Image 1: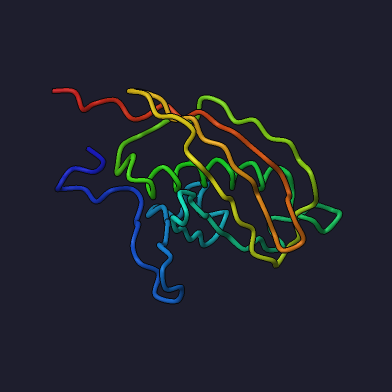
Image 2 (image 1 turned 120 degrees about the vertical axis):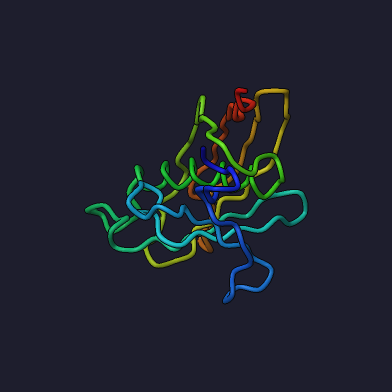
Length: 155
């Protein structure tokens, strides 16, 4: 069972050695989709989770900007990194119920891309989050999402 004492949790969440004050958010199985995004770091500051990656050539489209699919994938993963950083989940499968985005500008390859996420509301089973995806040049997109939290373990 994932997260049990015999099995390590699927994600590592630990202090990043090269980025003081930031945590590394890494899926332990590098054969899964998350590995495509590369290194992801996260921290909570002023009530927001800041989740960061640096997009590379493999994330680009023919216009040499970050592909929209890579942006959507990063946002989805960032919601889960934020959820963990807020202390709302430590292990177990959660599910994205919806993800709404409005693209505002192009994402630039090679520049840090940061999702700034806030928790709007938490219920017994759901989390409502929203945020901005930003780079130095400005806002790339705004987004909101709903996550269904993991079910309680069955006896």
